[in-house]
Image (cartoon, rainbow, N blue to C red):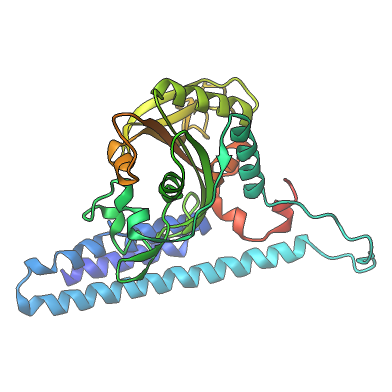
Length: 340
């Protein structure tokens, strides 16, 4: 086992030495993530004799520390190289006046996306609601039909504040519960806001991002109503008559559930690197509100029905503008942000 761990360290060191910024994130997941070989070794310690547990555990943890240090050192080296290159390209003209008039500011592209999406749904009869970013377990999980044994309740996925009771919300879906507690049907609302998840940042993931939740509850609402609203949204936001499809999926708080794909706006369905040659791009999840969610807010689930949907604001922005790395939104690079 010690020889295997040593081989893992040597292999990781070679790959890290020649990795670029994007590759480093993949290597971090590969060697330090939840499904990495070292993590699996630590999880399997219970199968080893007592006399071997401590030795193997120490070696595995030492290997993780070494690999983590190698990744950080490589990051520092890459940052210095990129910074030096940037300085050479961006020499300041000190003779230029930096006084009045001050340049006009603008909204962040993600905020602009949220405002645009909100305007579209307001035109469809939705109102805008907000919810707290610090939630209780009840609002974030229990009331949304997410049981206590669900993986999302693990400390590895959720930022808990105290003893598994209060947490940073992992989605804007608790806004459904707050709204339904305050209002009787008909309800038609979207809830935009910031959410938090305990995961490593990479090109498509961030520990802090934005979601937009939608909810409609009334008598005689069907899946047809949901499809009509979402198809109208896609056509208006992307300003094109793109095809839309609904694929069966699974969410705890909706039944039936679906993933929504739109025809790739870059290749018009022919297949390209953006859509991974499929011709389709996934944009959001949706479904009919689960009866247990309606019961949690004391709605009559025999009388009322509803639909819900949720989308990531950063993902929608990336799709609209062809951006391939979510981290670009939060690096405060004015050259990047001024494009929008």
